[in-house]
Length: 476
Image (cartoon, rainbow, N blue to C red):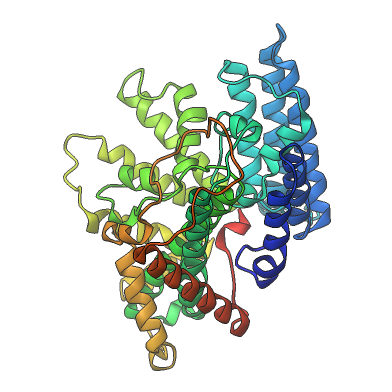
């Protein structure tokens, strides 16, 4: 169920939130677990079985990690988690690639399996693995209550598209968390800003992006090609960061602080900096659970470069079952390796943004062949071109949205998020209270509430009048 859907905004969220506020503390975790499973099942009941299997399996393995054979249990848990992910996400791709090879050898091919990808499986699988690894390392103790572990893995605000949350950051909050006016106001503010970013900016840009990328790239002019990838850069940023803002806001409404996931990535001066600002929790996951175990920067420059390339190879594969994603990941990894060299001369925003833009073509087309055609158009090398009807698509709304997207995509847009954290917060501790301290009453807060209500009404109106409401990271 999309957070930016009318049924979630006007039905599901009020029911879940009201129940969480009205129920006694002892029942809130159970209520959120039940509601999380129902929200997830809305996208497909069959997917829920995979999620429940993940909860039960990781609960059982976690209990075994105190034994003398804990390395075997950890290995088994990781294999089952990654094996489940590989089956649902990569089996069809692997069979397709094998069939291509068999055709060259004139050998009968396999029937291509039809496997539906469970929503959010890439995200909750990584969360489950982090729980097992942290339990093995002794960073956290195994959870002996299956319902609490189930809530950690299935918590609906960040279940489908992150941010990827560590168990050690959620454990104490599951046991004890506070609800206050300040936290509720912060959560509503963050959720509504995220909703506006998703509905008013990302969806508006998506309407034109869909039209451009549906064109024949072989006859596309250079201006349209560059405009298309620029608009897509805005769409994917506001689409994903807006959804992350909504997840963080929802977490606050239920008393949880969820890690930040974005920090103005297009203001980066290098690709290394970009990955410290883009999808922060994924980058941190790969750093702690792949890069460091591989040896990190220990062992010399060559091993460091190898480890970095392996991490970004894995990053590309995590995003999708296509060679375009593999190349996209290695493209970023290549520049991160180059930036480690003393002789590398480039470190500025235009350079980093250009590298990211070129990579977004692979990400959007999901095809190496189509990407090559698009790059040809970007270079102005198409032999014949058909002009795009910009007069029809570039209206006043798109002009305003594009300007707003540019303004808010840079650090000077931080004023919009005044009062919200840009750091990964620590777990909530201390005595919890269900009674708000005070109602907002200052002139500034009144203006802020007016802005939030306006954004909510505009977003609702856009959802009523526009059926286009995609979410890019649902595919991952």
